[in-house]
Image (cartoon, rainbow, N blue to C red; front, side):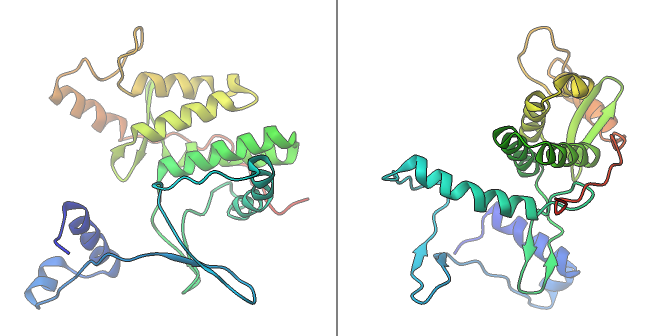
Length: 235
């Protein structure tokens, strides 16, 4: 299939991960090709049935929605909790073929997982789950929240992530003690541009001014908020 900007970027990232110089790869006649494919999920059991996988383009109504959601909740929650590490971090991607964790990460998905943990803790009314959710929130803030004075952004790989900042702010609001994170939430509101009256943001600056301010914001990371160690496997 013809190369696109996305596939070219994927090839470049793959070569980087493999430690291969792009110029040397091309000079040696190296070729990378992409192809379309169908993904199938094959479940365990005596008579496994392959199921085609779709990514957000097919919606099916369940005959008994409440029961089906209830049956999915427990295994989904169990899987999510198993990805939590003792320091609060969430495993983003794991390669079972070689038993290694991927170096890749995604800030918006990390904070979406945090939001799910907060909702799970509230639904279960569990102090243990709430402690785990809080630990995960603090770990993500420590990794991705960048402060500059009273401004803050969510930063990853040198870029300010607006969508992740929105989910992070929602996590701070959804926390059972939102006042605990009021400083971080207000800093995110100030540091992310948007047409919201009364908030100081970057949208009023010239392009050069925005670039300078973003460079300043990315020059400093917020400190870890607690340093606590929580074990998701603890009773």
